[in-house]
Length: 213
Ligand SMILES: [Zn+2]
Image (tube, protein in one colour):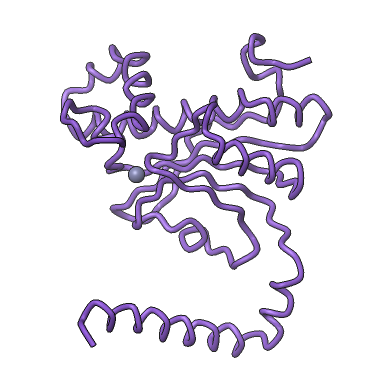
């Protein structure tokens, strides 16, 4: 057996160990899990392997609905992300949508440069728009690392707005459904999550042009 397959075998072995750990704590863990999921949160985060959603907030399976893509981007024509938001809001009736970016995001870094990476350039294009909208502020930061960190934050803020502008979220607020959108950022360097203080819980906090009636 080659080394590559040996590594995969190891993952299956570790899965069995994880199952046993869960059963040691609660013998009915999987009986409860298979029946229903009642998460209160939707996490929209980056695919980056260093930002595992459930793990960094200490939540168990069944406690958080998760959507991840490169650079935690919310694009109005992305059927995948929009479907996740719709299902989470209308069926699961989650109460919080948390857009979580992270410092050192490779997607944001690529968007700030000029190098062609292929297909992904299209996906990350909207982050260049974020840069253009805040060019003066970002360029005033003297060091490159500082500019990069600020762009990671600004990207989260832009994606929070994009979530608020979706018809799903607008309609939820219109029918008085309890729903709050948040913007957080994770520091890969120390493991701490920071609230960027951009939470939105009411349609009137959004520009009127995006409000549905
Ligand atoms: Zn990232």
